Image 1 (cartoon, one colour):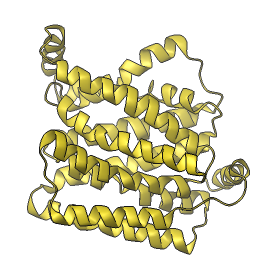
Image 2 (image 1 turned 45 degrees about the horizontal axis):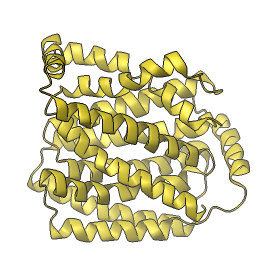
Image 3 (image 1 turned 60 degrees about the horizontal axis):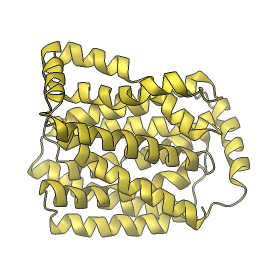
Length: 309
């Protein structure tokens, strides 16, 4: 991976790390599933009207939207609403990196170097130590489990994005956003009730939910359009095992942002684990050998033979 692409990957990590804080702020004004549906609906409407669909098989667009949109963000928003601290959520959510690498090995037959295995293992140990400490001391098991399921959805979405092999990654991200609103709004009506949804909209129209609207703007513009667009572009050029470990820098940004904005002070163990995560990230990522496009095409052929839908 080139130095410029490394910086892009780290920028996405910062944007996504601050995303959990924006979610936590937005949930003060919106029910979680309804808020998740709004997150994608705001993008879906102009996308359908003004953006041409990407030239990729629709199964990857739908798979990307269901896994990345409905599963990841549905579970994540509910977990934070149930009491998952945003800093801890950003840590646990990064289990998507080993999920992605594992799925890449099992389904796409990607090969890992010893350096990647060692570095990723070190980073995962850092994440696990903090997540385990928090889950035992201060957080119920259900929010942690929901966040892990959100991470699995992120991993599946990452592979769908990569298998789409889109030459218009931003179009892919935008059209992926067309998939989640209907199922998320349907789940909100069934589980949260129409009364809660209408109450949130009344607060918006009356100007009482301006912080939630600002949080929604951050999530839509910076997290989805900018962050996911860059991430998809990187995945179109490099193997998943090279790109995915950069997501391990997200919890460092998430813990710091939660501390600064929401007063969630990191413990000494969290700071130490953050150092371990960064060290593992630096050790486990290196310049990809060979031409990225050729490498991707080889993995796509292998993925098709492995029965990936």
